[in-house]
Length: 231
Image 1 (cartoon, helix red, strand yellow):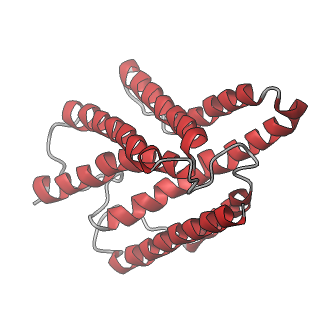
Image 2: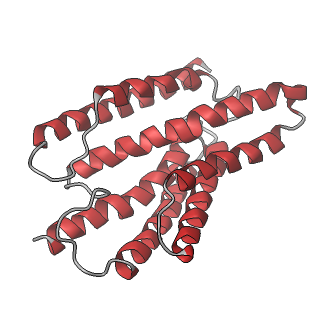
């Protein structure tokens, strides 16, 4: 128990350090690029809200970050591949179909490489803390307590569905009904699968899904636009 919590804390601290390095990286190149997105220290401080939940993963019926019962394939490989599929789909829809013409400048959802690696890793970490780590842990701790866990599975599926709705509703695009349906459906499905993998393999698996998506949608697409369309 104590060893698992220690591993959770060390991993979380490393992620915070990566976010801090990205913050200074962004400040160092500020002014060189239009639409550069740079974190503030408040972005990092607010992530400290996730710390208490590192102590209660097993109590909530969730695997700890490095639970020995979870294989590395289930923790990283398979979740990342799922995220990559969603990233490739987004590129096909939003870039290949809707915006085949070359960009004249990096759009706001893309950032210069290699800064993009730091920004989108930190962004994925932040999203998973507030979309999965905090809400699902709270829901499942309550589910364990309520009637001694009789409805634990029902609470999980309800929590998975509710947390999966947040991102697609927050990022609902304007446009045709088909585009709105695509965004809602894929956004909900990816977030729902993240909740499933979180319960199955822990927080790092959920994070891996998002990182797989961001690798293609934000980082590799950004490299392509910056190096080939803007060159």
